[in-house]
Length: 346
Image (cartoon, rainbow, N blue to C red):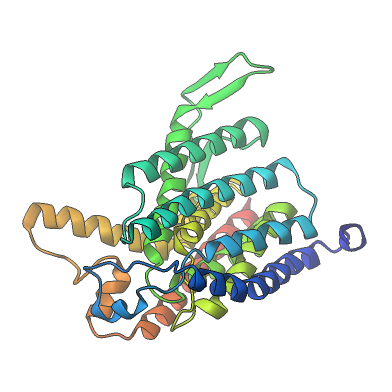
């Protein structure tokens, strides 16, 4: 199949999206049935909006099927190279971390799974290994470009270990990328609080990341990104309000890691913050709320993350989700325009 259509790379990207979407939609009903029969359901936050109490017991861990669909779609549509393997492995390992977290929630019958420290340690290890592989084996420069302004060199503090031809550890770049990857992981995780919110916004973002990778002549990352977008579309069929299943941390953490890793591979570390601006806003709302409350014992938002603030203001869940999709689309478009303009001038 690959050989016959390899001369049409754009078709491969669309095929990856279609395959992942169809596989997700085909496998999800059986997964939902299994989860229901096994009484594996979501544990709702006790301090969350009262309207969410009806979600208690809704099947979770839909991210398992999404990740399976992504792997199959990638294998069917492109030849694996080191970049693709690194992207897939980092995403799947983060998904495994999320799966452990989801499973612990089900076992304990609480909305809290792994401790925050345990999740952060796992994310830190995966992020650090990925960035070191990217720098040493994918020829990723330890720089971050801010279009039209400056290219920041974070390789000025580098340790070279005499292994083979030399193994570089650019300390500053590792720290910055670790913050980016771990930040995206948790930002997408925080966004996954309403039916269809995370899956819809990640779908929009991944379509743009696929376009960026394709324009950068990186077919395999483009296919990988398109496959994730397709899996999100397929999952959205079951996750739209009222949701039949949630993706859980298995999905949200792995999707956030995938976005961060794609940003590194395509050298859009800064632009990815704009493209994923909605996730950044959700994470910042929590940080601001916690910081301000500790200092002044008052709340900036009616409730954090940000989507719950608008629910408390009287917006329906569907209205919040659709408007956040629109905002995500606008931010992703702005990021792509900035990237496109930068490549034209460059």
